[in-house]
Length: 214
Ligand code: AP5
Image 1 (tube, protein in one colour):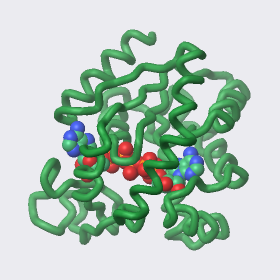
Image 2 (cartoon, protein in one colour; image 1 turned 60 degrees about the vertical axis):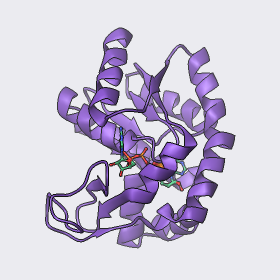
Image 3 (tube, helix red, strand yellow; image 1 turned 90 degrees about the horizontal axis):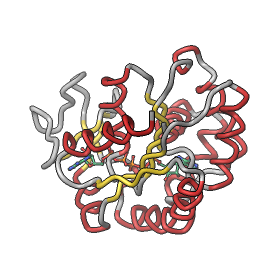
Image 4 (cartoon, helix red, strand yellow; image 1 turned 135 degrees about the horizontal axis):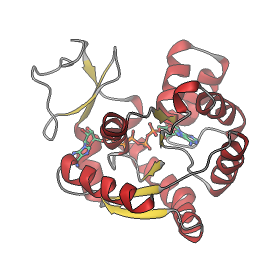
């Protein structure tokens, strides 16, 4: 399945829960790109400037990384794809990749959250600089302020969570990804999910859509 939704809608939070429930890996295009940036690879160096501006990273290199990841053995019995596709062109490429792998998409779940709530969620998000775990100062606080519950690493704000970049990311979502929802709906794959309320409540809604898609 794929998870869609604007920045801060809760895709990463829900993908982790789905991974635990269904025993399939979480494949996040944002995490793949952030790893490339941290490793200083040529793709990472190129991607960073786009990510810092809140723009989409060009397809040419990203697609190869996604295809390589989906081709790994742990994706054989399914996966939760978070943040990819974001455009109709990426969706069409994904369908081709999956056909090549002898599988297909069951569900595209789009999390719906108002812009006001997104700003609250993103402004309070803190991520671990060591292991990447995500927290929220109010909605999902760590046990000890500023410190990761999982590895004890220092919690920081993501570079692209600055106010101006968030506004750009939301504009890109409206322009590039909203039209994709219509396309996925035409393909009979889209479930629009109310992304508000507790993370547990949102999770149960997604699980209900997964059950209906089978
Ligand atoms: P990416 O990392 O995918 O970022 P995003 O889509 O903007 O999504 P976020 O990670 O910001 O939010 P999320 O929906 O996962 O929310 P989360 O669960 O963390 O992409 C980053 C950049 O990489 C892009 O801008 C682009 O440049 C590039 N990129 C990535 N994919 C690409 C692609 N396919 N093509 C081209 N470029 C690409 O939750 C947010 C906060 O809210 C957390 O603090 C969490 O604790 C809290 N929270 C979650 N759920 C709830 C809830 N129910 N109630 C209260 N708080 C909640």
